Length: 531
Image (cartoon, rainbow, N blue to C red):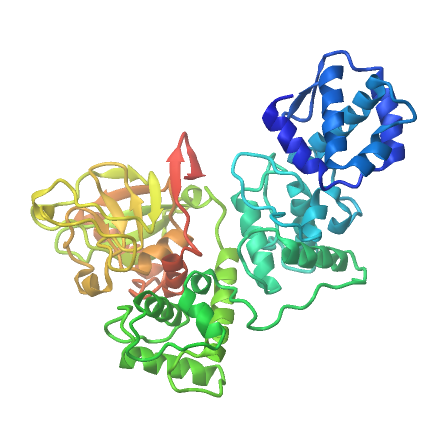
Protein backbone atom coordinates (compact mmCIF):
# COMPACT_ATOMS: atom_id res chain seq x y z
CA UNK A 1 0.00 0.00 0.00
CA UNK A 2 1.65 3.23 -1.12
CA UNK A 3 2.03 6.30 1.08
CA UNK A 4 -0.45 8.19 -1.12
CA UNK A 5 -2.99 5.37 -0.83
CA UNK A 6 -2.46 5.17 2.92
CA UNK A 7 -2.98 8.91 3.44
CA UNK A 8 -6.05 8.84 1.21
CA UNK A 9 -7.49 5.99 3.26
CA UNK A 10 -6.70 7.65 6.58
CA UNK A 11 -8.45 10.85 5.48
CA UNK A 12 -11.51 8.77 4.62
CA UNK A 13 -11.43 6.83 7.89
CA UNK A 14 -11.45 9.97 10.06
CA UNK A 15 -15.06 10.62 8.98
CA UNK A 16 -16.48 7.10 9.22
CA UNK A 17 -18.88 5.68 11.80
CA UNK A 18 -17.85 2.02 11.71
CA UNK A 19 -20.15 -0.78 12.84
CA UNK A 20 -18.06 -2.90 15.24
CA UNK A 21 -20.11 -6.10 14.92
CA UNK A 22 -19.85 -6.12 11.14
CA UNK A 23 -16.14 -5.48 11.31
CA UNK A 24 -15.60 -8.28 13.82
CA UNK A 25 -17.33 -10.77 11.50
CA UNK A 26 -15.61 -9.62 8.32
CA UNK A 27 -12.30 -9.14 10.09
CA UNK A 28 -12.26 -12.72 11.37
CA UNK A 29 -13.23 -14.05 7.94
CA UNK A 30 -10.57 -12.02 6.17
CA UNK A 31 -7.88 -12.95 8.67
CA UNK A 32 -7.70 -16.43 7.15
CA UNK A 33 -7.42 -15.04 3.62
CA UNK A 34 -4.40 -12.79 4.06
CA UNK A 35 -1.77 -14.33 1.83
CA UNK A 36 0.11 -11.44 0.22
CA UNK A 37 -2.07 -11.40 -2.93
CA UNK A 38 -3.40 -8.15 -4.35
CA UNK A 39 -6.93 -6.92 -3.66
CA UNK A 40 -8.22 -4.28 -6.03
CA UNK A 41 -11.28 -2.11 -6.07
CA UNK A 42 -12.38 -1.50 -9.64
CA UNK A 43 -9.03 -0.17 -10.70
CA UNK A 44 -9.21 2.75 -8.22
CA UNK A 45 -6.76 1.47 -5.60
CA UNK A 46 -4.72 -1.70 -5.25
CA UNK A 47 -3.86 -2.77 -1.68
CA UNK A 48 -1.34 -5.42 -0.77
CA UNK A 49 -2.90 -7.88 1.67
CA UNK A 50 0.20 -8.07 3.80
CA UNK A 51 -0.33 -8.88 7.49
CA UNK A 52 2.52 -6.70 8.75
CA UNK A 53 1.46 -3.73 6.62
CA UNK A 54 -2.17 -4.02 7.68
CA UNK A 55 -1.25 -4.35 11.34
CA UNK A 56 0.83 -1.18 11.10
CA UNK A 57 -2.19 0.51 9.53
CA UNK A 58 -4.37 -0.81 12.36
CA UNK A 59 -2.04 0.80 14.91
CA UNK A 60 -2.20 4.10 13.02
CA UNK A 61 -6.00 3.96 13.03
CA UNK A 62 -6.02 3.52 16.80
CA UNK A 63 -3.76 6.57 17.12
CA UNK A 64 -6.26 8.60 15.11
CA UNK A 65 -9.29 7.41 17.09
CA UNK A 66 -8.35 5.39 20.20
CA UNK A 67 -11.86 4.70 21.48
CA UNK A 68 -13.63 3.96 18.21
CA UNK A 69 -10.56 2.19 16.90
CA UNK A 70 -10.38 -0.08 19.91
CA UNK A 71 -13.96 -1.31 19.92
CA UNK A 72 -14.16 -1.46 16.13
CA UNK A 73 -11.03 -3.49 15.49
CA UNK A 74 -10.42 -5.65 18.49
CA UNK A 75 -12.67 -8.49 17.39
CA UNK A 76 -12.63 -10.46 20.66
CA UNK A 77 -9.06 -11.47 19.93
CA UNK A 78 -5.83 -9.53 19.96
CA UNK A 79 -4.15 -11.77 17.41
CA UNK A 80 -2.46 -9.80 14.64
CA UNK A 81 -4.17 -11.61 11.70
CA UNK A 82 -7.63 -10.77 13.06
CA UNK A 83 -6.75 -7.11 13.48
CA UNK A 84 -5.25 -7.09 9.99
CA UNK A 85 -8.40 -8.72 8.65
CA UNK A 86 -10.51 -5.93 10.13
CA UNK A 87 -8.21 -3.32 8.59
CA UNK A 88 -8.49 -5.06 5.23
CA UNK A 89 -12.30 -5.02 5.55
CA UNK A 90 -12.25 -1.26 6.04
CA UNK A 91 -9.94 -0.78 3.08
CA UNK A 92 -12.33 -2.82 0.93
CA UNK A 93 -15.25 -0.60 2.00
CA UNK A 94 -13.15 2.46 1.20
CA UNK A 95 -12.34 1.20 -2.30
CA UNK A 96 -15.98 0.46 -3.07
CA UNK A 97 -17.08 3.92 -1.98
CA UNK A 98 -14.37 5.61 -4.02
CA UNK A 99 -15.23 3.80 -7.21
CA UNK A 100 -17.94 5.64 -9.16
CA UNK A 101 -18.86 2.92 -11.69
CA UNK A 102 -19.07 0.37 -8.85
CA UNK A 103 -21.90 2.31 -7.15
CA UNK A 104 -24.91 0.05 -6.93
CA UNK A 105 -28.04 1.39 -8.67
CA UNK A 106 -29.97 3.85 -6.53
CA UNK A 107 -33.01 1.55 -6.28
CA UNK A 108 -35.49 2.89 -3.74
CA UNK A 109 -32.86 4.51 -1.56
CA UNK A 110 -32.72 8.27 -1.12
CA UNK A 111 -29.50 10.21 -1.60
CA UNK A 112 -29.48 10.94 2.14
CA UNK A 113 -29.09 7.19 2.76
CA UNK A 114 -25.96 6.78 0.62
CA UNK A 115 -22.75 6.57 2.73
CA UNK A 116 -20.61 7.95 -0.10
CA UNK A 117 -22.65 11.19 -0.02
CA UNK A 118 -22.99 11.50 3.76
CA UNK A 119 -20.19 14.04 4.13
CA UNK A 120 -21.91 16.39 1.66
CA UNK A 121 -25.22 16.13 3.52
CA UNK A 122 -23.46 16.87 6.79
CA UNK A 123 -21.83 19.95 5.31
CA UNK A 124 -18.31 18.83 6.10
CA UNK A 125 -15.67 21.27 5.01
CA UNK A 126 -14.58 20.64 1.43
CA UNK A 127 -17.16 17.89 0.86
CA UNK A 128 -18.61 18.24 -2.63
CA UNK A 129 -18.82 16.59 -6.03
CA UNK A 130 -17.79 18.44 -9.15
CA UNK A 131 -16.62 17.82 -12.68
CA UNK A 132 -13.51 15.67 -12.93
CA UNK A 133 -12.86 14.66 -16.53
CA UNK A 134 -11.77 11.10 -17.34
CA UNK A 135 -11.97 9.83 -13.76
CA UNK A 136 -14.71 8.15 -11.76
CA UNK A 137 -15.75 9.88 -8.53
CA UNK A 138 -17.51 8.20 -5.61
CA UNK A 139 -21.23 8.95 -5.40
CA UNK A 140 -21.53 10.37 -8.91
CA UNK A 141 -23.45 7.32 -10.14
CA UNK A 142 -26.10 7.95 -7.49
CA UNK A 143 -26.41 11.62 -8.52
CA UNK A 144 -26.82 10.56 -12.17
CA UNK A 145 -29.47 8.00 -11.18
CA UNK A 146 -31.36 10.66 -9.20
CA UNK A 147 -31.30 13.18 -12.04
CA UNK A 148 -32.51 10.56 -14.52
CA UNK A 149 -35.30 9.47 -12.19
CA UNK A 150 -36.42 13.09 -11.82
CA UNK A 151 -36.12 13.48 -15.60
CA UNK A 152 -38.32 10.42 -16.16
CA UNK A 153 -41.00 11.99 -13.97
CA UNK A 154 -40.64 15.27 -15.89
CA UNK A 155 -41.05 13.43 -19.20
CA UNK A 156 -44.31 11.77 -18.23
CA UNK A 157 -47.25 13.07 -20.25
CA UNK A 158 -45.00 15.08 -22.57
CA UNK A 159 -45.09 14.72 -26.40
CA UNK A 160 -43.15 11.84 -27.93
CA UNK A 161 -39.49 12.67 -28.29
CA UNK A 162 -39.45 15.17 -25.41
CA UNK A 163 -36.26 14.83 -23.37
CA UNK A 164 -35.98 16.45 -19.96
CA UNK A 165 -33.01 18.77 -19.48
CA UNK A 166 -32.37 16.98 -16.17
CA UNK A 167 -31.48 13.76 -17.99
CA UNK A 168 -27.82 12.68 -17.99
CA UNK A 169 -26.67 10.76 -21.09
CA UNK A 170 -23.51 9.13 -19.75
CA UNK A 171 -23.30 6.11 -22.08
CA UNK A 172 -20.94 3.56 -20.56
CA UNK A 173 -19.43 6.11 -18.18
CA UNK A 174 -21.74 5.91 -15.19
CA UNK A 175 -19.94 7.40 -12.23
CA UNK A 176 -17.92 9.87 -14.32
CA UNK A 177 -18.76 13.50 -13.51
CA UNK A 178 -18.24 14.98 -16.97
CA UNK A 179 -19.81 17.73 -19.05
CA UNK A 180 -23.20 16.02 -19.46
CA UNK A 181 -23.58 15.56 -15.69
CA UNK A 182 -22.44 19.12 -15.00
CA UNK A 183 -24.99 20.55 -17.47
CA UNK A 184 -27.84 18.53 -15.93
CA UNK A 185 -26.82 19.65 -12.43
CA UNK A 186 -26.79 23.28 -13.54
CA UNK A 187 -30.26 22.99 -15.08
CA UNK A 188 -31.54 21.42 -11.86
CA UNK A 189 -29.98 24.18 -9.76
CA UNK A 190 -31.59 26.85 -11.90
CA UNK A 191 -34.96 25.12 -11.55
CA UNK A 192 -34.88 25.49 -7.73
CA UNK A 193 -33.41 28.22 -8.09
CA UNK A 194 -30.05 28.09 -6.35
CA UNK A 195 -26.53 28.94 -7.42
CA UNK A 196 -25.93 27.20 -10.78
CA UNK A 197 -22.26 26.32 -10.37
CA UNK A 198 -22.65 22.69 -11.48
CA UNK A 199 -21.21 21.49 -8.15
CA UNK A 200 -22.99 19.10 -5.76
CA UNK A 201 -22.68 20.77 -2.37
CA UNK A 202 -24.90 20.61 0.71
CA UNK A 203 -27.68 22.88 -0.60
CA UNK A 204 -27.82 21.19 -4.00
CA UNK A 205 -27.88 17.64 -2.64
CA UNK A 206 -30.63 18.53 -0.16
CA UNK A 207 -32.84 19.91 -2.92
CA UNK A 208 -31.95 17.01 -5.22
CA UNK A 209 -32.86 14.50 -2.52
CA UNK A 210 -36.19 16.25 -1.93
CA UNK A 211 -36.92 16.30 -5.68
CA UNK A 212 -36.14 12.57 -5.88
CA UNK A 213 -38.57 11.82 -3.05
CA UNK A 214 -41.29 13.90 -4.75
CA UNK A 215 -40.63 12.15 -8.08
CA UNK A 216 -41.43 8.88 -6.33
CA UNK A 217 -44.76 10.28 -5.17
CA UNK A 218 -43.75 10.47 -1.51
CA UNK A 219 -43.92 13.36 0.94
CA UNK A 220 -40.72 15.16 1.91
CA UNK A 221 -40.74 14.98 5.71
CA UNK A 222 -37.89 17.44 6.30
CA UNK A 223 -37.80 19.67 3.21
CA UNK A 224 -34.73 21.84 2.68
CA UNK A 225 -35.03 25.53 3.38
CA UNK A 226 -36.63 27.28 0.40
CA UNK A 227 -34.29 29.61 -1.50
CA UNK A 228 -34.56 33.20 -0.35
CA UNK A 229 -35.24 35.46 -3.36
CA UNK A 230 -32.21 37.61 -3.93
CA UNK A 231 -30.08 35.85 -1.31
CA UNK A 232 -27.67 34.76 -4.03
CA UNK A 233 -27.16 35.67 -7.66
CA UNK A 234 -27.92 32.59 -9.74
CA UNK A 235 -26.61 33.75 -13.13
CA UNK A 236 -22.86 33.18 -13.41
CA UNK A 237 -22.40 36.45 -15.30
CA UNK A 238 -23.29 38.40 -12.14
CA UNK A 239 -21.48 36.13 -9.69
CA UNK A 240 -18.05 36.86 -11.14
CA UNK A 241 -17.97 40.61 -10.59
CA UNK A 242 -17.67 42.06 -7.04
CA UNK A 243 -19.68 45.18 -7.97
CA UNK A 244 -22.82 43.04 -8.42
CA UNK A 245 -22.35 41.47 -4.96
CA UNK A 246 -22.18 44.97 -3.49
CA UNK A 247 -25.34 45.99 -5.35
CA UNK A 248 -27.09 42.87 -4.04
CA UNK A 249 -26.03 43.81 -0.51
CA UNK A 250 -27.52 47.28 -1.01
CA UNK A 251 -24.14 48.97 -0.69
CA UNK A 252 -24.06 50.68 -4.08
CA UNK A 253 -25.78 51.03 -7.47
CA UNK A 254 -24.77 51.25 -11.12
CA UNK A 255 -25.89 54.42 -12.88
CA UNK A 256 -25.27 56.62 -15.88
CA UNK A 257 -21.63 57.65 -16.11
CA UNK A 258 -20.36 54.62 -14.18
CA UNK A 259 -16.73 53.70 -14.70
CA UNK A 260 -17.31 50.00 -13.95
CA UNK A 261 -16.73 49.15 -17.61
CA UNK A 262 -16.86 45.36 -17.46
CA UNK A 263 -20.01 45.44 -15.30
CA UNK A 264 -21.68 47.90 -17.67
CA UNK A 265 -20.80 45.68 -20.64
CA UNK A 266 -22.42 42.70 -18.89
CA UNK A 267 -25.50 44.79 -18.09
CA UNK A 268 -25.78 45.94 -21.71
CA UNK A 269 -25.28 42.42 -23.08
CA UNK A 270 -27.94 41.06 -20.71
CA UNK A 271 -30.47 43.73 -21.68
CA UNK A 272 -29.73 43.16 -25.36
CA UNK A 273 -30.14 39.38 -25.08
CA UNK A 274 -33.45 39.92 -23.27
CA UNK A 275 -34.67 41.97 -26.25
CA UNK A 276 -33.97 45.56 -25.20
CA UNK A 277 -32.43 48.20 -27.47
CA UNK A 278 -29.17 49.48 -26.01
CA UNK A 279 -28.61 52.07 -28.75
CA UNK A 280 -26.64 52.50 -31.94
CA UNK A 281 -23.32 52.27 -30.09
CA UNK A 282 -24.48 48.80 -29.00
CA UNK A 283 -22.50 47.08 -26.23
CA UNK A 284 -19.73 49.61 -25.70
CA UNK A 285 -19.24 49.52 -21.89
CA UNK A 286 -20.47 53.11 -21.68
CA UNK A 287 -23.44 53.67 -19.35
CA UNK A 288 -24.96 56.49 -21.38
CA UNK A 289 -28.47 57.67 -22.29
CA UNK A 290 -29.30 54.60 -24.39
CA UNK A 291 -28.36 52.14 -21.63
CA UNK A 292 -30.28 54.20 -19.09
CA UNK A 293 -33.34 54.21 -21.36
CA UNK A 294 -33.12 50.45 -21.92
CA UNK A 295 -32.88 49.83 -18.17
CA UNK A 296 -35.86 52.11 -17.52
CA UNK A 297 -37.92 50.15 -20.04
CA UNK A 298 -36.89 46.89 -18.39
CA UNK A 299 -37.87 48.22 -14.96
CA UNK A 300 -41.29 49.32 -16.23
CA UNK A 301 -41.90 45.99 -17.99
CA UNK A 302 -40.93 44.12 -14.81
CA UNK A 303 -43.29 46.23 -12.70
CA UNK A 304 -40.50 47.38 -10.42
CA UNK A 305 -41.19 50.34 -8.11
CA UNK A 306 -38.05 52.12 -9.29
CA UNK A 307 -37.92 53.01 -13.00
CA UNK A 308 -35.08 55.52 -12.76
CA UNK A 309 -32.69 53.70 -15.09
CA UNK A 310 -30.38 52.97 -12.14
CA UNK A 311 -29.31 49.39 -11.45
CA UNK A 312 -30.27 48.92 -7.82
CA UNK A 313 -30.78 45.76 -5.75
CA UNK A 314 -34.36 45.03 -6.87
CA UNK A 315 -33.50 45.56 -10.52
CA UNK A 316 -30.41 43.33 -10.29
CA UNK A 317 -32.43 40.51 -8.68
CA UNK A 318 -35.02 40.72 -11.49
CA UNK A 319 -32.32 40.81 -14.17
CA UNK A 320 -30.55 37.87 -12.52
CA UNK A 321 -33.75 35.82 -12.39
CA UNK A 322 -34.56 36.44 -16.05
CA UNK A 323 -30.99 35.90 -17.23
CA UNK A 324 -30.72 32.58 -15.35
CA UNK A 325 -34.06 31.43 -16.78
CA UNK A 326 -32.98 32.36 -20.30
CA UNK A 327 -29.70 30.47 -19.99
CA UNK A 328 -31.52 27.42 -18.61
CA UNK A 329 -34.00 27.40 -21.51
CA UNK A 330 -31.22 27.78 -24.09
CA UNK A 331 -29.16 25.00 -22.51
CA UNK A 332 -32.20 22.76 -22.63
CA UNK A 333 -32.36 23.31 -26.41
CA UNK A 334 -28.69 22.44 -26.98
CA UNK A 335 -28.37 19.84 -29.72
CA UNK A 336 -26.60 16.58 -28.94
CA UNK A 337 -22.89 16.64 -29.69
CA UNK A 338 -22.21 15.32 -33.18
CA UNK A 339 -25.86 15.42 -34.29
CA UNK A 340 -25.88 18.57 -36.42
CA UNK A 341 -23.22 17.67 -38.97
CA UNK A 342 -25.10 14.48 -39.80
CA UNK A 343 -28.21 16.47 -40.75
CA UNK A 344 -26.95 19.74 -42.24
CA UNK A 345 -24.20 21.07 -44.48
CA UNK A 346 -23.25 24.63 -45.44
CA UNK A 347 -22.80 26.31 -48.80
CA UNK A 348 -21.10 29.71 -48.88
CA UNK A 349 -22.44 31.38 -52.02
CA UNK A 350 -19.84 33.97 -53.05
CA UNK A 351 -20.53 34.11 -56.82
CA UNK A 352 -19.49 37.40 -58.41
CA UNK A 353 -22.00 40.28 -58.45
CA UNK A 354 -24.33 38.43 -56.10
CA UNK A 355 -25.33 39.07 -52.49
CA UNK A 356 -23.03 36.77 -50.54
CA UNK A 357 -24.85 34.29 -48.36
CA UNK A 358 -24.33 31.17 -46.28
CA UNK A 359 -27.02 28.57 -46.96
CA UNK A 360 -27.83 25.74 -44.56
CA UNK A 361 -28.88 22.67 -46.56
CA UNK A 362 -30.70 19.60 -45.31
CA UNK A 363 -28.47 16.68 -46.30
CA UNK A 364 -31.40 14.34 -46.89
CA UNK A 365 -33.28 16.61 -49.32
CA UNK A 366 -30.53 19.02 -50.43
CA UNK A 367 -33.00 21.85 -49.81
CA UNK A 368 -32.11 25.06 -47.97
CA UNK A 369 -33.52 25.50 -44.46
CA UNK A 370 -31.84 28.80 -43.51
CA UNK A 371 -29.64 31.53 -44.98
CA UNK A 372 -27.48 34.30 -43.56
CA UNK A 373 -25.48 37.21 -44.96
CA UNK A 374 -21.71 36.75 -45.15
CA UNK A 375 -18.65 38.65 -46.32
CA UNK A 376 -15.95 36.60 -48.12
CA UNK A 377 -12.44 37.75 -49.03
CA UNK A 378 -12.10 41.02 -50.90
CA UNK A 379 -9.88 41.69 -53.92
CA UNK A 380 -6.31 40.67 -53.17
CA UNK A 381 -7.45 38.51 -50.26
CA UNK A 382 -9.93 36.23 -52.01
CA UNK A 383 -11.37 33.25 -50.13
CA UNK A 384 -9.40 30.14 -51.12
CA UNK A 385 -10.49 26.53 -51.41
CA UNK A 386 -13.69 24.79 -52.44
CA UNK A 387 -14.56 22.17 -49.82
CA UNK A 388 -13.89 22.11 -46.09
CA UNK A 389 -14.86 20.38 -42.88
CA UNK A 390 -15.08 22.44 -39.70
CA UNK A 391 -12.25 21.13 -37.53
CA UNK A 392 -12.72 23.26 -34.41
CA UNK A 393 -15.26 25.59 -32.86
CA UNK A 394 -13.68 28.27 -30.69
CA UNK A 395 -15.76 30.59 -28.50
CA UNK A 396 -14.09 33.50 -26.71
CA UNK A 397 -10.71 33.06 -28.41
CA UNK A 398 -7.87 35.59 -28.45
CA UNK A 399 -7.07 37.04 -31.88
CA UNK A 400 -3.42 36.95 -32.89
CA UNK A 401 -2.28 38.97 -35.93
CA UNK A 402 -1.44 36.67 -38.86
CA UNK A 403 1.91 36.78 -40.62
CA UNK A 404 0.56 39.04 -43.37
CA UNK A 405 1.46 42.51 -44.54
CA UNK A 406 -1.97 43.93 -43.66
CA UNK A 407 -1.60 42.81 -40.02
CA UNK A 408 1.91 44.15 -39.50
CA UNK A 409 2.13 46.19 -36.29
CA UNK A 410 -1.22 45.04 -34.91
CA UNK A 411 -1.42 43.70 -31.37
CA UNK A 412 -3.34 40.64 -30.14
CA UNK A 413 -6.92 41.27 -29.03
CA UNK A 414 -8.42 39.33 -26.14
CA UNK A 415 -11.81 37.60 -26.14
CA UNK A 416 -14.85 39.84 -26.32
CA UNK A 417 -17.16 41.75 -28.61
CA UNK A 418 -14.36 44.01 -29.87
CA UNK A 419 -12.34 41.01 -31.07
CA UNK A 420 -11.87 41.18 -34.88
CA UNK A 421 -13.28 37.64 -35.16
CA UNK A 422 -16.15 38.21 -32.77
CA UNK A 423 -17.19 35.96 -29.91
CA UNK A 424 -17.09 32.68 -31.91
CA UNK A 425 -15.18 31.25 -34.85
CA UNK A 426 -15.40 27.98 -36.75
CA UNK A 427 -12.04 26.75 -38.04
CA UNK A 428 -12.22 25.49 -41.64
CA UNK A 429 -8.93 23.67 -41.22
CA UNK A 430 -7.08 25.09 -44.24
CA UNK A 431 -5.73 28.38 -45.58
CA UNK A 432 -6.12 29.93 -42.08
CA UNK A 433 -9.76 30.53 -42.96
CA UNK A 434 -12.70 30.65 -40.55
CA UNK A 435 -16.39 31.36 -40.41
CA UNK A 436 -16.48 33.96 -37.66
CA UNK A 437 -18.29 36.86 -36.09
CA UNK A 438 -17.32 40.51 -36.34
CA UNK A 439 -17.61 43.67 -34.26
CA UNK A 440 -21.06 45.25 -34.62
CA UNK A 441 -19.55 48.25 -36.44
CA UNK A 442 -18.65 46.06 -39.46
CA UNK A 443 -22.16 44.70 -40.09
CA UNK A 444 -22.87 47.20 -42.88
CA UNK A 445 -20.40 45.39 -45.16
CA UNK A 446 -22.13 42.01 -44.89
CA UNK A 447 -23.31 40.61 -48.21
CA UNK A 448 -20.28 41.72 -50.17
CA UNK A 449 -16.54 40.86 -50.17
CA UNK A 450 -14.83 42.58 -47.25
CA UNK A 451 -12.64 40.11 -45.35
CA UNK A 452 -9.05 38.89 -45.66
CA UNK A 453 -10.21 35.47 -46.83
CA UNK A 454 -12.55 34.31 -44.03
CA UNK A 455 -16.34 34.16 -44.12
CA UNK A 456 -17.69 36.86 -41.82
CA UNK A 457 -21.09 36.86 -40.14
CA UNK A 458 -22.88 39.23 -37.77
CA UNK A 459 -21.89 38.80 -34.10
CA UNK A 460 -25.22 37.12 -33.32
CA UNK A 461 -25.84 35.24 -36.59
CA UNK A 462 -22.71 33.14 -36.04
CA UNK A 463 -24.14 32.07 -32.66
CA UNK A 464 -27.51 31.18 -34.19
CA UNK A 465 -25.79 29.18 -36.94
CA UNK A 466 -23.67 27.24 -34.46
CA UNK A 467 -26.42 26.57 -31.92
CA UNK A 468 -28.88 25.32 -34.53
CA UNK A 469 -27.06 23.94 -37.57
CA UNK A 470 -23.25 23.81 -37.47
CA UNK A 471 -20.52 22.24 -35.34
CA UNK A 472 -17.11 20.65 -35.62
CA UNK A 473 -17.50 18.07 -38.39
CA UNK A 474 -19.86 20.16 -40.53
CA UNK A 475 -19.14 20.10 -44.29
CA UNK A 476 -18.72 23.46 -45.99
CA UNK A 477 -18.67 24.08 -49.74
CA UNK A 478 -17.74 27.33 -51.47
CA UNK A 479 -19.87 28.18 -54.51
CA UNK A 480 -18.57 30.62 -57.14
CA UNK A 481 -20.88 29.55 -59.98
CA UNK A 482 -23.59 32.08 -60.88
CA UNK A 483 -26.02 29.45 -62.18
CA UNK A 484 -25.76 27.51 -58.94
CA UNK A 485 -26.22 30.76 -57.03
CA UNK A 486 -29.50 31.41 -58.87
CA UNK A 487 -30.65 27.85 -58.23
CA UNK A 488 -29.97 28.17 -54.49
CA UNK A 489 -31.82 31.47 -54.36
CA UNK A 490 -34.83 29.98 -56.19
CA UNK A 491 -34.91 26.96 -53.85
CA UNK A 492 -34.82 29.25 -50.83
CA UNK A 493 -37.65 31.35 -52.27
CA UNK A 494 -39.73 28.23 -52.94
CA UNK A 495 -39.24 27.22 -49.30
CA UNK A 496 -40.39 30.65 -48.13
CA UNK A 497 -37.00 31.51 -46.65
CA UNK A 498 -35.68 35.01 -46.14
CA UNK A 499 -32.18 36.08 -45.12
CA UNK A 500 -31.91 36.00 -41.36
CA UNK A 501 -31.82 39.49 -39.81
CA UNK A 502 -28.36 40.40 -38.54
CA UNK A 503 -29.65 40.38 -34.96
CA UNK A 504 -30.95 36.79 -35.21
CA UNK A 505 -29.38 34.90 -32.32
CA UNK A 506 -29.21 37.88 -29.95
CA UNK A 507 -30.65 35.73 -27.14
CA UNK A 508 -27.36 33.78 -27.04
CA UNK A 509 -25.03 36.77 -26.89
CA UNK A 510 -24.82 37.52 -23.16
CA UNK A 511 -24.35 33.81 -22.39
CA UNK A 512 -21.44 33.64 -24.84
CA UNK A 513 -19.85 36.80 -23.47
CA UNK A 514 -20.07 35.48 -19.90
CA UNK A 515 -19.10 31.88 -20.71
CA UNK A 516 -22.45 30.45 -19.59
CA UNK A 517 -23.02 29.21 -23.15
CA UNK A 518 -20.77 27.94 -25.92
CA UNK A 519 -18.39 25.00 -25.98
CA UNK A 520 -15.00 24.40 -27.57
CA UNK A 521 -15.17 21.43 -29.95
CA UNK A 522 -12.87 19.55 -32.27
CA UNK A 523 -13.44 16.99 -35.01
CA UNK A 524 -11.19 13.95 -35.07
CA UNK A 525 -11.48 10.42 -36.47
CA UNK A 526 -15.02 11.05 -37.64
CA UNK A 527 -16.22 12.22 -34.22
CA UNK A 528 -17.22 15.57 -32.77
CA UNK A 529 -15.56 15.91 -29.37
CA UNK A 530 -15.44 18.43 -26.55
CA UNK A 531 -11.97 19.92 -26.80
